[in-house]
Image (cartoon, rainbow, N blue to C red; front, side):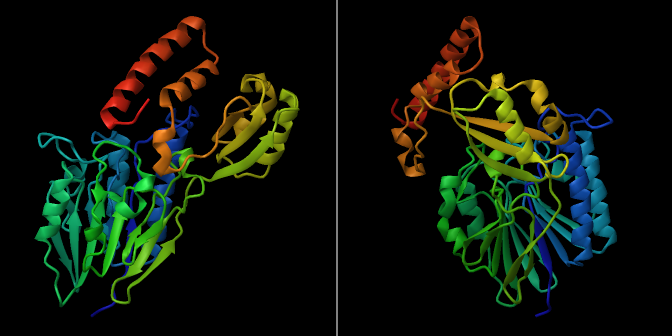
Length: 377
């Protein structure tokens, strides 16, 4: 068999906005930098001279993407095509329509013979040289994955690669709890493929002997602090898979400040010193432990320079009055969600009328969800 070089990426979520900082043209700064990084990442991928680029889904954050999202993606695809790189892509749960009457955005942009897209709720087979790509996009129903995998016919004369989008059962504790988030049966992950490339989970990792998540290029939420970001570069003939570094907006954990004895001004000074040296437009999180007073007592002007330098500064508070002992995923039934929500609302800077309205609506919604999920109050 010939040597084939493959790059796998996923979960770009084009169109996602965060924070309230604006670029010079008035667009959301986070979104704008993500597009810039995507272009720079595409050039880095092209420099690797792969034969095939795999995209595992959630290219767009919405099934109805913005014009800028579509034009940016079309621009990047043209670069790959001009470089002679075959593009193989599938839909994820964000960019797959939840109704057969709505067109998928991948259907709109995939108008070139070098682009192979699976976006029609069905298994597709793409043969490129000595490799067969078995494509299973995000489906309307969980059972559709099992039906699709039954259509796969492994070729003994080719490399066989599965590309799909979903939650591996081996890491079900990392469930994102989104619409159309389906678990991938363990039998799929252990099937007789040379390599399996997955998207949906934003942390790059191996989840089975031959199965990998590429992860997302960007840190999209603070829950992803510590994730490995980038892409994968693979050779199915040699069964090798390696990390490919791609540009992204930095996200840094500045640690914990034990703040019970500190004034607001002292806290601001410590935070500013911890943030010194971070790249411009970084995202940073800091935790205030045993905080006896609201974070609003930190003078806004004292943190102004730090906030101006960063794309975002996220300040978490661990209150003295609340026991935040970590509860493992299998012990989630031990959480009194309604009580936790009530405590959270009481700590917010709300008027009595606002607090009563939030408590009433939120508690009612929580009880409805709890009843549906079978979790005791």
